[in-house]
Each structure stands twice: as C-alpha cells, then as structure tokens.
Length: 404
Image (tube, rainbow, N blue to C red):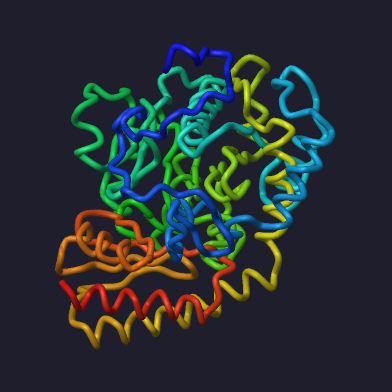
C-alpha cells in the first residue's frame, strides 16, 4: 500500500493478485468478472460455457433476474443480519416451506454442506444420548464417500490425500464397503448412532448407488435402531430430476443434508430432520451466527421454489436421458472414455487420459469442466441449460478428447 493510501481509504487502487489468497486451491489463470445465463466471462471479455455450476451450485445459472430481484428487495429493507437470537420472516418461511415439502418436522440452517453434515453427526449423537445410550456415538460412512473437510466430515470422507495430512481424525467414525453384509456386521445398535450416505457419490466419481442397496440399508438401520442420514449436498435439489434425490428412490431418511444450490451461490446449508431427532435437541445444543440470515434465506426461498418446479424437473429428467444417449455415442465414437455414470444433470466420464490435461484443453477453448478423481470428468451444468447448448458443450468436449 502506498503512503497516500490508508486502511480507511476505500478509493485507493489495489492490484488484484492471486498470491494474496492462501494457496489451498490450484486456480485457473483467467480472472472472472461477469456471469450471464450459462456463461462466465473473464476480464478480457472471453466467454466460457459453464459445465461446472460452481460445483453444482448455480443451478439457475448466472445473473438470474429472480435472484437479483430478491436481493434488491432485501437490500432495500436494510435487514441483512440479525443472528439467530431473533426471529426473521425469511428464515421462518424457508423452513416452513422445506418442512411442508419433505419428511422433516424441522430444519437447522448453517452456511455450507460440511457444516450441515457436522451438525447431523452431532444431532445423531444427541438423539442417542437422549435415548439413554451413552456409548452410542459411532458414525458409519461408505467407501467412496465425500462429506466435507471439517474434523468430523473429513473422518467420513474416503480420500487418502485429503485425510493423511491431518491425522489423527475425529474418533468414532468409520468407512466401510458399499455392501449390506459388511454393514450388517458393523452396525452395532449399542455403539452406532448413524449411517451417512450419498445417493450419488459426486466427488467419489459420480457413482450412482444401487436403489436395492439403499433400500436394504434403510431396512437395516430401522432394524438396528440406527439413524440414516442422506447427504444430498451435491446430488439434491433438482440435479437428478427430482427435488430430493431420495424422493426418486422412494426412500425416507431420518435426516437429509442440503447446501450447494440452495441460494444459487450465496452460502447456506441445512439439516432436515424427523421428529425423533428434533425432539432430542435442546436450546444450546448447537449454534450458528450466520446460518439462515435474512438475505440468504430470502434468496433460498425463491431458489428452492424454482428448483422444485415440475416443469424444470421434467426438463432435467428428459434431457438427462438424452445426455445418457449422447455420452454413450461419444464414448463409442472417440474410444477415449472407459465408462459413463450418472443421471439428470450429474454425470461422470471415466477417461483413459488423466482428467487434468483434458480440463486444461477445454478451458482454453472456453469450456469449463471439473474432475471427480484422477481419471474422471464430471459434468454439472446449470439445470436451466438447454439441450442445444449441452450439444455445443459435447462438441467441444469431443474435440478436446481427440487432441489427447
């Protein structure tokens, strides 16, 4: 900072430098400054077709007029934050809407998916203690899972490179194979409080879990008096063509965690819980300063109503079926893909070549892609993306695959 600039001088020019941000991410070199629909634009004006959606976040795309209108209304009212010491209309409306459209009896708001899963772990342990089981604290996750990078959720995340630098992890959490017999051996009703599962393992390679397995798991958790937590942080809120992914499976969990697309880019997460769980919780058992504040809750109320629109969900289901056919044809034409997995607007493409150079070549051509493992590309387009635009993305992807 120059001598003429002070901490209070907001007019002083400041150079933008990536070095000022802690290097926990390998970011692309382009500097993004604007978004419109399904495109992002860098500071040179170059357009990029967004097949990432901020990692399944901007399901309504960029610069959505409805989202902008709600933000402007909240700013006009002037009430952005109150803390959770006070009631706010937006938070109560959002919670009431979620309860009315789900199995849940009440909702806890937080700021991210990892926080939602951490809260669900706490709620499961509190439920078990309320039943008089002092030793019933275990959490079980599945092979291939990703539930977050906080102390508890990292222990439930099956990625050695994420876990190893931070050992020892939170005790009482174990990862087991996606196998009912192994789960039957592990789910001790005296020591295990909950199982957490993603219907589609996003970071784990976009692996769609077998509905028969999931129903068997639900029966087993009922049998063993163990809670079932369904993590829909990435696969929920319309991405599979159902508002909740578990609805499309005919599954009724005890808790569901949601986050990413809830407010189309503003930070919010939530735990939806049934009555046995919520009845065990008391004031002071958990907290959050920012969770469900007036601004983000108002936007989320608008977004979840849009994402639950039957016409949008039908669009995702039908276009997802079309995508499956197009991706299958792409795999056959190019010989560059080993497998494709997914549904709706959530697909994983296993590649012979490492994913990173494919993503880099696509980026140079104005196509944004993300990986889900060393040899898996992940497609997470905004739910509003048309079949025609998806076709454009696949044409660029085919070019990029052919250059490898």
